Image (cartoon, rainbow, N blue to C red; front, top):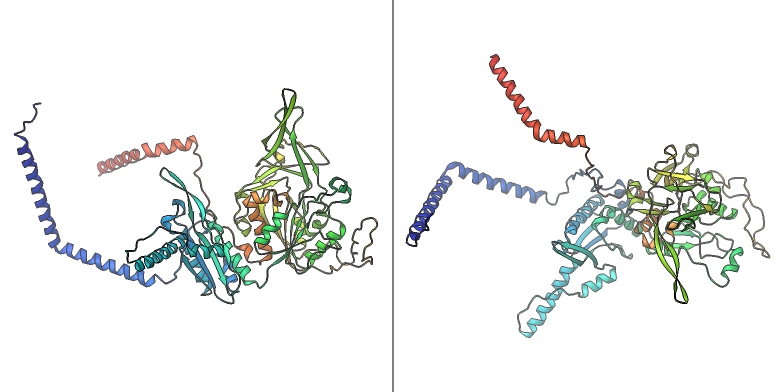
Length: 628
């Protein structure tokens, strides 16, 4: 094809320009004609009127709290009935302040958090009938505003033009720090950028002249337990005094038979961190060894017993007396100890050895209708621990012993996943996975439950594949899974019992004497009858077949263990209503893998079903037409 000459170019441009101008003139004329028509005029007027009506209705009903439906299967946004009862105990209005950074400064996954929290606070405000008010405060914006006003005042004094400065931490941040409101770091991933942002998201509750309570971090992943967090703190603010609980054991004591090994050394306190966690939650924790010179503290609402050593008869009696008098009780204990070490005859393998702990809490709990299983308990769902492995190698004339840590998993190192935790109770708040290391199951005597009109609720269970093994003394443990008929399904690992429990040391029984060391005499030598007469008061007991999970070397490292401890104490100590405020988290529902038959059916429906229907319809209509 010949190339276009330069002389032809202006002619082509002129033709194209004329065509475009003609098209625009015709389009303009058509638009004017449409606008002048009666239909379009009426349509525009009707649209404006409808828009005005919608805006007016929205303004009228904006401040009215109408019915809100919760269509989620887990009822995530619906308040528990207990909320109204707890708020009914308020003597004066309580103020809630939500300190939160603006959504523009939040990471992508945090942008809806402010809206969700405000909706939750608004629902609680409606139920409270004016006894709870809330406000939202953006510390970053106020810091910026304060800095700007200060800069503006300085510039006006100097005769210059005020300029908006960058955000700085001013007096507001210092005041919030005193309240316990501190910005924290969150990960932000946007496009190809990864960064750590410091944001505010804390709630402060103020009631009368009492010390303010703070929910330090409100996160999207903990939003499901926000209702419980708020209500438990309100319950503590309502109370005029700190709830008092007893804790066994106290400072560790050296048994007489072990004193030659410790000499001047003090044995480690395995529950120091546990007690500190409870004190940080506002509890008055009093430790006791339940001895004649270290008795059970008075006026306690709850008693915690970490039964990892045998108890004498008098200690069992004192615990029995507490339950008979209506004191709430938490019992946790390990029935076996285990040791994992490199196998001698199989390099690279590890053997498991175990022995009973001689814990005798079952002597008491059997009278209440339950016991900690004395058999070794195992599960297919496991976690792992780090085991030290030593190796000796030669370096010239010297030999060096090296140590490395090997991850080892055994069926007694049980992992309880979140879907095996009872989400209908407040015990599930903040719990994902639990490391139930060396624990056992809870055996419930259903006949005893029915006979004494007791009730029980399982808090969490094992997996669908667990089993037991007999444990007689120290020695190797058979770890192999059992035959299919011996597999146990979802065994209870923690249970809450409620009712009036029959005492072991009941009417007519003699109070056991305090044990004495050689050469010592008791101040109380007279025999006396038990004070546990008649049926006991209504109370609750939480039994957990594992105390190791609450020890100081494990508790601080697992958030779910701390949440379990706090939730159990809150549920028993702060009132019956709190235990019914459950965790409300959306369940991730994944699409299951489709079978080959389902895939073939889907392909047939997509490719062939519609054409076959059209062909069949055509044949039917053709036959019907011919029959006419």
